[in-house]
Image (cartoon, rainbow, N blue to C red):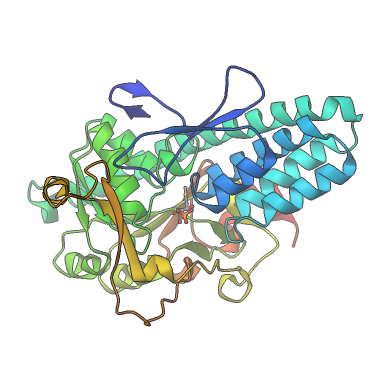
Length: 383
Ligand code: MRU
């Protein structure tokens, strides 16, 4: 997608053919910087610290992380260690395990001298497939949005088709296009008059910082709202559809996504607003049925709740007071000293609250029958 007219992807092989480039998402939206990852340790650290994030992108970074590990040591022991190290970085998004297993399976029977190169090819294939899957999700979602917008023409009374989204499931969370944002980009490019309500998505604010950045650079009309505003907007008929991504989807259609997604689904259900979840097949965990009981929820530091970071607006005043004017970003305390924060990073939305799943293979009900209908040739046949 575009940043100031230039097309970018979130991850690429550097010209040296050995290291991997990524966009540092911890500095967005205020600073656009890229980073070069040259070792498995660096790839693991980038995932852990959320330099890269979003389920599909974590998977691709993990795949390249195995390549980086095998470049310096192609032995079985190094492969096993790198797999465990990368797999332990973030527990919820199943794409990471899926991509690591795929690369490991591809290389483990090969002679050591061939492993790094084959891992590179496999990681590149996973990245290309992710782009194709996200573009296809966009096409299926576009058709859905066009039909919904036409069906709600009377209620809309000339106002844009309004979509609410939570967290960032855009191109920054994938390799390109995104999952939940792909239909939005395709609809905008197709000329649908649309406007996006962007949940800020506390505590890390991926909506306010990343989704708003993406939509702004693509020229999609949008407004950032506090997480608590969505229900109110729905009650007043100002949301035509909700669309979010998912980090892990069970075979029964339960979806696990950024904390707060469940509350949006409840509000949507109460107000008759359709609630869609967009996902590539790599996000389905065919081994699980009960999302609430079985999906591991990442516990992040309470300091993400008790503190907040941003760009200082009053640097002039600070400089006048004798502080360093170069200091443009800051982390500030929100809570009294001594108050603890609790920070589960994801929640589970039961399938019954999901209107439909939008996948690269088409739109299906959020149910085992719906998923098996689309993916019977993959894990869907077993279990
Ligand atoms: O903690 P994050 O920023 O990695 O969480 C990302 C999300 O929750 C996304 O909605 C999800 O990964 C789907 S991305 C296409």
